[in-house]
Image (tube, rainbow over all chains, first blue to last red):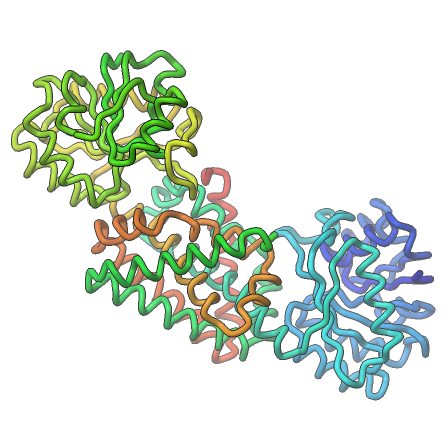
Length: 288
Length: 288
């Protein structure tokens, strides 16, 4: 049970977390923090938070759980702002899609207090942003990855684990580097492909025709290109090394495909497509 | 009204076409043709066709409308087989995703009779194959592109147009080259990306973890990688020139993105993502 929850960044993720915890009575009061008055007022009106502050240092006062759900780029500054104002037994967590840089920033801001910082990443979301898009079931049956290290406080880890379980999520732990590599491959790389594909097509002649005749495959493949450019810029930069590795790996497969096509090598093309279909079909049931 | 419809290749597309025309009473009898006895027997049992033949030359006898809905690679051989057996006033069309090579093959097989061949392409489908996956509403509100040229018989063009309109589709005409370029960009290229992405990921270490933690974006982006490898190999080879152009164009955008990321150039990344989001949002309503 969380007595007082402080959500810094009351958007899709932060808002949905507050809604989910409230819906199962797992939280006492909720204070939100952000920069946009309209969004915070909406959050109060929607019953997502009880009150709000524009100042992170003020917002964390008295909170036993602090969730930093801002953009990745903003998190280090938030850590600096709140470090001196946290309660001694406060637990801090975040929701960022890349963990190495966040953890390094937390170490700098919190010093020894980093033991009570539990890096977290709920693998859930939609292409929408803002508290208006939030809903209590966003995390139900979704994976939440926590990336504690040897210095992480066991009690803090348990508290964050229980919080996410209360939302209906499946919580697992992973090494920071493994997390960043896996997410680079399964999430960050696909977003780069979707953005690059739409940008490439929209720059072609007759792009009106091009989009008019696009079918379901194109729609599905590019849905994620409607995601927030700012958020994805932060993620890409924050997880740059792992993402560059994934991009290079994709390039190699792509170049193989282009070479096979240019050579009219049906056999190689067919093998590549068949391997992909087999992998996609096999894992289809676990991808949700 | 079609008196006798011959569907060569009773799969998802051919089967759905027969179902759609039957459901609105736009066809008398339907004969199917294919190589697989089990599939053809299913088609009769499901009421999709009335009878079948394994021999295309036999199947077209007496048919006033012949739809070649086999794979692209098989179509030229089919054309050769049926050319001498077509009724004088028979209209022939196809459903291939690339049109230049099909039209060239039809000219060789049909000679002057190519005037009654109307190249067609319904932009509809699912990742499934076979008559069991077919359904009458597959083409409702979908685009069907016909690519007649100056030699195409006006009456034949009208008959094919009416046939597709009867299925609920929106029929338009396009120049062959334009069709192949537009489809390379909006359909064939996305399929190559999906296949390459899944193949790339499945070859990575810990690919079990990789798929376990994949979220909705990955699922949507790679759904089309479950499509038939054989069919897509045919399409890629058939539309090779236009597809290579699209692949090269994508590579240029992709390389820009990788370069910007490697340089930590947030400004360029943000601009690319924002352009893509804007294009995807703007055309979102027309992509169905």
